[in-house]
Length: 615
Image (cartoon, rainbow, N blue to C red):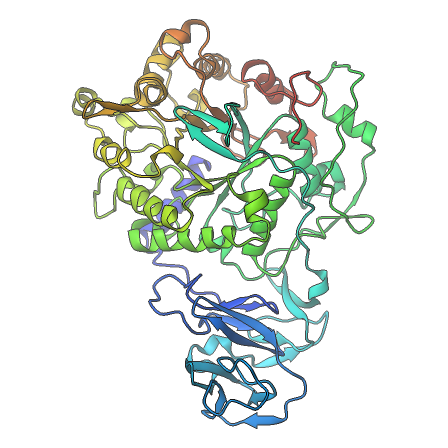
């Protein structure tokens, strides 16, 4: 969720003609992907070649491994045969003696500067001008290490890449500055869905999600926000903050993103001067005021080595995608799950094009699945939140006003992702199109036809009839967004709130969706809720809604089963509608909000006997 005023600006931007995100060319590291059909760019049918928007760093060449995978490899310094433009440079025909595999550029045969050895077929590769694909590949000038670069001014030193620093300045830095994978730490148990419950895979152990939203990848930060204010590591260092969130009891972080942010070639540098807070000071920081315990703060088993006196210097800067993968791995290393939330909010055109929408998700999931520790650590620990608050895009369950329906976007995306990754992903789906029933954006799973007709709201029945027949139906979580009066301007409290919530989404985990005599239940996780907790009406509403989530008190008459989880909006101090769980320039924890989550929503921090660390 973004502030309503900002949303107005974003929607106006979309209406006034945001027709697309211009393609960004980027430089790939040695041994990294530069072509092939595995990550084929959207809108391209044949990708068994070097991708037009990717260049290898100076000194490397893009080499075909197989139809799915091309990679950047160092060009031999000993170039004993210089090949003119259009001349043969690889392939099985005329294969040099002593070479076992010739369906690659031939060793020691180099194209002229500005050309690239391109596969035509197994037998013939030839030198072609790089700008035959796109003018944006060609470097006009070169810069040395630590000198400014960008705007087709490329790095000349082998091993350097152009790293974004500010909107006005980028510089060439050694790739040695780029981060390795974070420590493995203690990944949480992989998850699966059993009926209306989320459980540890292969067990009956129920897992209740207690989460926090942390935005930044959706607002041009190229990282989660709040890391550039300095101070102690506990206040400004990404990995240290993730550790603290786990100690506070959160076990999942939701990461809103936009593709235009992920496509940014040169992510911002968040290296800041900082000092190390002592273990005892962190221990006191992570306890509610007035709390006392003899327990010691659990050790950080996934601590990241930092340069002395600096925080966040370890964050990858080769691309925003690389940084997102690092973010996912770091969160998992602390025993937490990750929810990737696509949040276009009217600023990206692919949200209105089913084919492009699916293609972008396929590309991102391919990257996630390709991280080195996918099988051991990431699989079963990532949720895909297919689209944030479709209402904000004018998207209803059914197609309308020239827009595709959420049902098409959801089902075709899940069809595609399930075919790619049959096991290892869980899916989050949000409601839409039912504001006339008093529901805010992201809520709205009503299938009662009498209510649909009475209030003239969007009909989710077609979607559910299709979903219950899909092979991935047991991997889907329903996730409404539900907010108090200060955000929605509605006044539902007590019985009226509980009844509304039961009709809108609560029935899905108890009664389920019934079709042809069979009922299918789903887990329900509240994807967003939160408040400043300053108004009386908000405090009362939050208390009532907590009762509904936990199926207690008077709310139990409307909901007999606790929800599978919730995620608070949000960590960020700069949230217009709710504020964050930090304040004072992101430095202090807001124990008013944390106390509410502990006392009313079941958040279990480290000093509680019920706290269970990842193992």
